[in-house]
Length: 111
Length: 111
Image (cartoon, rainbow over all chains, first blue to last red; front, side, top):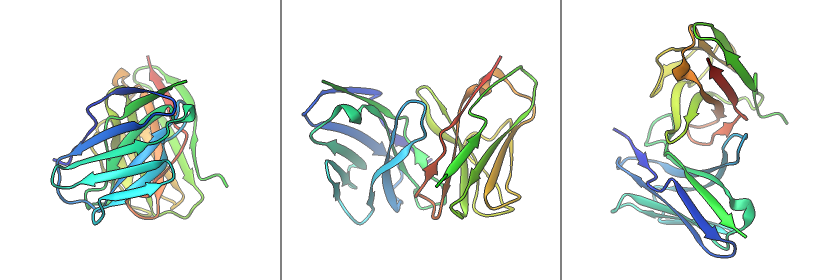
C-alpha cells in the first residue's frame, strides 16, 4: 500500500521565521516527491520537487530535504511570508503513472 | 493561456440526480486525472487516463464513471448522486505522470 502521511494538520509560524512541513512515506520505490501549494477556492499549484537520487533541492526560499533511510521528507520555507499561508500537500508517483497525495498541512503565517 | 478548465464551478444536486463534470486542457497533455478533496482526507484519485480512449480506476472510483473520447477532454459522470459525493472535485493534466497542472475545482453539494 503506497501511502504518504502528513501528520500535522496545521502549523502556525511567525512572519520571518522558518516554516518546516513534514511528510512520511511507506513505499521505497519512487521517482520524485513533489510539494504542491493550495490557496482557498483555487487548484493546487506545483511548488518544488526532489528526485530519488538527491537528498536536497533548493529554490529561493524553499528547500526540500529527503531522508531515504527514514522515509521522510521535509519542506523548509525561510523566511516565512504572509503569502505562504496555504495548505501544502506532498505527493509522489511511487514509480507509476499517478500521484498519491498526503492529507495536507495548513500553514498560517502570523504577521 | 487557459491551461485546465473545469465546468461548472459550483453545483447543487438532489440525491439520485445525475450530472457530468467537464475538464478541458489546451496543453496537449496525455495524462488526465480526477481527484476529490475532502476535509482531513487530502486529494484522493477517482479515475485517470493515460491517453485518448483510455481510462483506469483510482483509489475511490465507486459511483463515478469517466470518458476520454478526445485527448483534450476528460468527463466525470455521477449517475445517481449521493450525499457522500459532496466534495470539491479537481481535474489535472500532465505530460508525464507527475508534473500536474490542476484546474480551479468544482464544488459539488448533494442534498
